[in-house]
Length: 351
Image 1 (cartoon, helix red, strand yellow):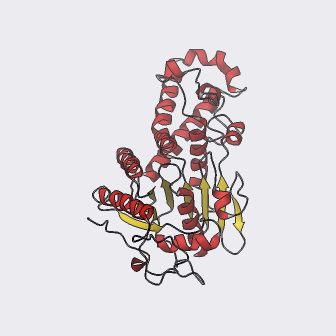
Image 2 (tube, one colour; image 1 turned 90 degrees about the horizontal axis):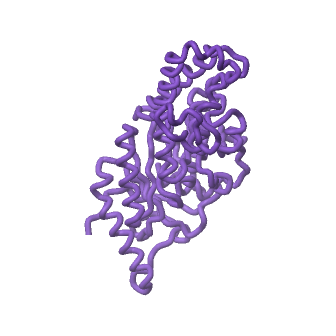
Image 3 (tube, helix red, strand yellow; image 1 turned 180 degrees about the vertical axis):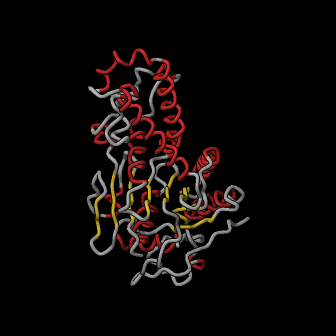
């Protein structure tokens, strides 16, 4: 059977494991994939390793079903806060409801709000009063809109040298990545609408909360510029690495293939693929502590043999798919991956 050309862990010891010196990653690292493959684990491990290198690092979760707090074994707030005193590690779990309460589906992304336009763009269910007029039936979902608001906010935040993002499952992530295009289109149509309705704007002042319409238009122009910057950053391989996380199962391979194809359409670079929960033969893990990993009994365990074959088949079918990408393999651990010790082991695998 053809083997996937990946680098196994060379040395991981039970005691005294230290994180790699530095993290070979750009300013923005996004982990994506189907639900339950270990995106949160990879994001937390990468962020912790980055912060241990004295790099001010923010790890944020855009997944509505947050597990970052559990993985890091600490309470993670909705707004960025330092969660480790000894290293510059910051974290946040985006709360879509809270983001919506702060200013509609987009929040105050234009600094002082959108001069009343936010009410026209849609409510928290995504329904837009101007949907038909603008050529679309509804705004994007609240979760994705709130996540984009945060990305725009943290893009130029001087507090952080690196931002690591634990994305929502594939479908939500793709909708998030579509937002720059969707919002750019809607903002452009709103500006065109203003030009066509110059004479009617005087009678619409009440919709702008007492502000002059020009103030709302200025906010829209600023929003459009920031959306364009976000799109540019996401497409720049020197600044962004979208890392696909999968498990060695055929369904995960299929979904990863779909995600890779869509990312190509968005022109978003994918340089790294992480294959998580791989059943390792300890002969391939030099110096490894046998108690840290699940090593299959291929002689006396029928279940182990069947799972081994499933994993090997999935890895083989992924051979061509990930050719040209940096593929990292993370073993199936005997213990739940949570807390700094286990994250150190994962970070060693990702080094």
